Amino acid sequence: QGDLTIVLGPEHVELFEREGIAKDDAKRFLHLNARTLAREFPEDVLNCVRDWRSDEIAIITPDTPIPVVNDWQDINIVVAGGPAGSHSSFLAGFEARSVCVEV
Image 1 (cartoon, one colour):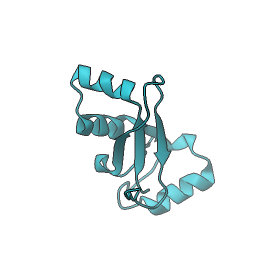
Image 2 (cartoon, rainbow, N blue to C red):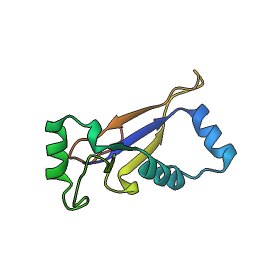
Image 3 (cartoon, rainbow, N blue to C red):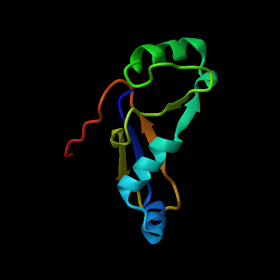
């Protein structure tokens, strides 16, 4: 629950741009494909998922694919880093929304 932030290095962003992949397209793709079958979760974690996401996923069976976030708009994509190579990462949220402030 909450959101997820993908931090792309400039080299990866160039690949997306070269292929004509827009940020929203990447977010939709991740939402549709970044899923784990319920059977892969430890039982205590699955019980939390059942509690937290019962509005979104009414019935959870072992074969239910659980998306990493509720909605594609819950995925943030930012660019950071320099020309040091193809390094990207992600920051998982937990029951909260990310907040950005100017430093």
